[in-house]
Structures are given as structure tokens and as C-alpha cells.
Amino acid sequence: MSRIIRSGLATAVLSTAITGIALASGPAQARACFLSIELEHFNGSVVGARSRYCEPPGVDNPLPTTIQRKSGTSWVNVTGTGTGGAAYKCVGTSSRTYRLKETPTAVKTFPCS
Image (tube, rainbow, N blue to C red):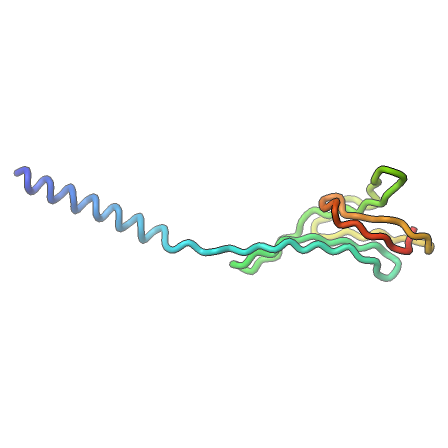
């Protein structure tokens, strides 16, 4: 095969490979994800929820959630770890401080012991 033909074939093969890669990768899509954290007092219970919502594809992913109550200078789990949410049935009207173990900065005090 002549040198010109070999060079032309090599260029054709290389440009085909590059085109295939470009088509396969496509344009990059921006993906926005939001973390939802809730800790509320509702109907005599402390209720916590955590999830991550990502768009695209518009999916809400539940995250591990554990409610803790402050006891002196430490924190005590008052629920097991739930997927997406947890609830602690409380009684009384004494104020206590609660948080989500997985999000320790979200601290709230409720009239609930």
C-alpha cells in the first residue's frame, strides 16, 4: 500500500473514533440536589425527616434519620435509625432539646419530655 493511502486510512479511522467518542459523551447536564431536613413537634411527638432531592431526574432519596434528646452535656438516641424519617412519642410539657443525629446543627427545643 502506498504511503499516501496508509496515511489517508489512518486519518479516516482516527476521525471516526473521535466522532464516536464525541457522540457517545453528549452534552453535560447540570444536576441540582437539595437536602431537606425537618424537625418538628406534631400531635405529641417529635418528628424528624431527612431526604435528598435531585433534579434531574426528579427523585427524592430518603436518608438515615435518628432523633436524639439532650441529656446534660451529651445526646441520647430516643429512636432507632429510620430511612427518611423517625418519630418519638413524648409526654408532659417540660421543655427538652432535640436534634437529628445525622444533622447535629439542627437543634430545637419543644414542650415535650
